[in-house]
Image 1 (cartoon, rainbow, N blue to C red):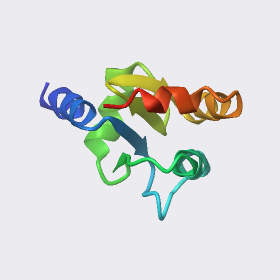
Image 2 (tube, rainbow, N blue to C red):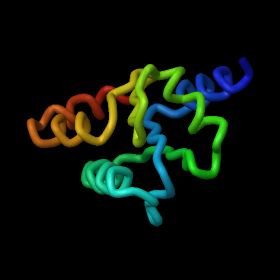
Image 3 (cartoon, rainbow, N blue to C red):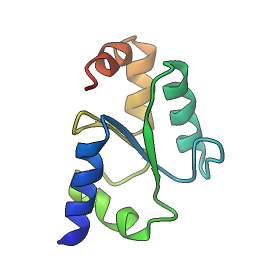
Length: 103
């Protein structure tokens, strides 16, 4: 399927990518807003994809990732998870080490 190739390319081409609702400056859901705020704390470069503006990705990324919700954080081709996992990793100070693994 072409959409799976598109998703795979996005994930491969971007060491840190956040699939979210809205944009970092204008999040459209509370969980996306909180995820962006955590990532920004680390002062790292990341790419985002607004799934509200990309309905094909919104529909098929959950199948590709086997993860039903947004946001989704991917680092080095690996799904880290949604906001709950991101928050937990941040609070237990493990996210910093995961982010150091970026390309």
